[in-house]
Image 1 (spheres, rainbow, N blue to C red):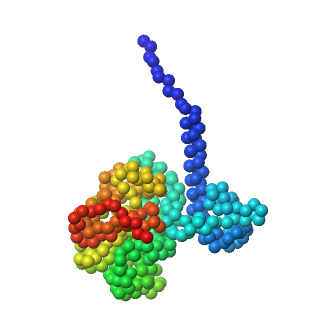
Image 2 (image 1 turned 120 degrees about the vertical axis):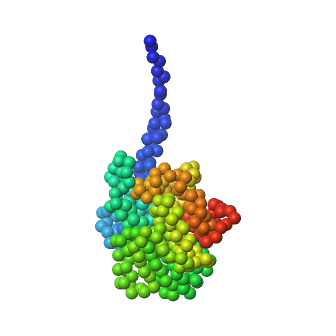
Image 3 (image 1 turned 60 degrees about the vertical axis):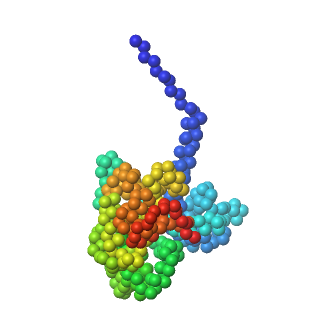
Length: 368
């Protein structure tokens, strides 16, 4: 008996094309890490303030060694981020590039996730092999990274773009509101708000004892009396008609806990109160997620959330704006608006109030 096999041929052209594509992706990944290094060392800020400068001048302004800065500049030149004048041996960051790199915090914050994923490579690989969530220590690192995102740049964005999403909110804060921030982390966001709006009263909840301790120390050091920080699970608000505004920025909870948290939010809000929520720009639709300009990073963050154990893996029907809108409506927060900011491609913003809308629309308005 003779067995016939079909000979499978490999296209040499396709193999070469894919290898070139892979090399390009590896090269771009390395370039992204160096772009992140430029943020961490302040080089992008320095270059945005200089017109034409040598590597020595740039290094001196940044307080770094010239030999290392020269290599970084060469890589940035090769990646097309900076320009080089071979006659005068000077580098220049075009104003158009500077506007994108330093005009908002979104890319600096996005790259923090990339570097975090690199640091956690061993833990992520072990978690995948074991089919188990990440360790408590690693989860704490992720919480610290999320807290670090609430940087000065994010605070500026909050005042300039996020709070204005709600007409009249800044004026109301000046006059005096009761505000709760769920998942406040180390409290830096609330401290800025408490300083800017002394007539308002602020409370921050977070389950991390370490972060709450940091927040309390900072508040005491600044002598702020209109802000308080409480170690508490985010589903346990324990308040009725107590807050005019509740903010929830990038809080990671399991689907069931999200339902409980939003129900507690609805009870804690006053009848004319508002929930302002920021979440990843993620959809239930796989095809839509792949169309996102930062799709690989977006899906990497979603995977990281799964591995923390607070989101069930493969819970595609429980993830994304569709599931979130459904949860908000079920919690009695159906008076809902969904907004996008041009300065923040990774996130979506939800403005929800107590009530039931006739129909919840998923088409977003872009705020300028």
